[in-house]
Image (cartoon, rainbow, N blue to C red; front, side):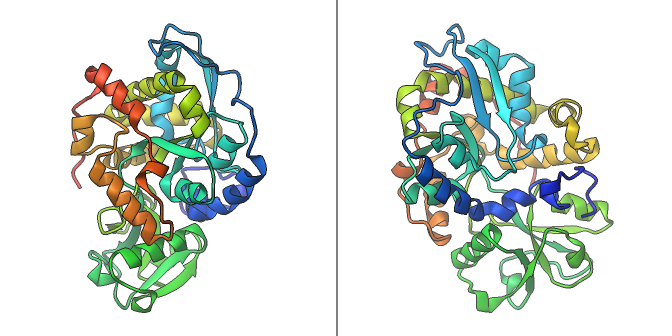
Length: 377
């Protein structure tokens, strides 16, 4: 990969920032589907965090452990701000331990086994786990749009619309990414016969060399890399073209949702404050990732700033400005359920989502709703 963003650890085999999640995608569920069945019944409480009588920030909530969905890069800038600016402490936590993802333990596994109380994941992973019996709920979502896209190049064969896909060669990684791409084809009324799927890895060199016409990518990653290589990226986002689903979701067990609501409420308030700071300052977000939380990864500050800026386009919408960060409208929930069905998981909204804590937070603290500047498409 041409990225200088990460000095890859051995398990990445040269992959860039989101390649393991994309490699896992729904495939990460394969680990979780086995893991949660073996772990069910665990009574561990995810560290020393305890329940509280209030979410005012005055209670002693102890230590909280959170499983991130990936390595400590810009993707978790809101968590870094919440920690750095004392919002976790103000909420009543003695400390919050952010556990990096990208390993073989999914957030779903970590939740069910009791290693953590809160996990960051995606409905594309959590919903299939719930369908198989995992007692989990999504209580909010940082990304209002999933970051998956088809990247093509203006200098080669630009694919700007769904109609442009017909007859084209599409490079898709095996596993979860393939499941998502096939779900996308279903959602837009195409079939695998309408395209030629080329099994590829994560390096965009084959795309740049013209070996296929589009590359299954992450909006906040490969387009930036292609531009740095001197190409003009053309991005066809899945969320805006037939397959909308949320990502970077806050996921908890049913038991935690029932017995530790005040703790979750305090956590989400701190998260709202942290992400409010993060989206307002991409450069500072990158600084925190590069020089502090992800300093061992040797992240590139310029790339991380570009990614943080692009990431805001996934977080901020008119609905977020009206209802608050992490919220989901009924229409967005319905779109998620339809997208999941296209990807092979038939699940009800009530079985997947419980946004009641966020509703309480914003009803009691309307000042937490911020009007952000929404990035242009």
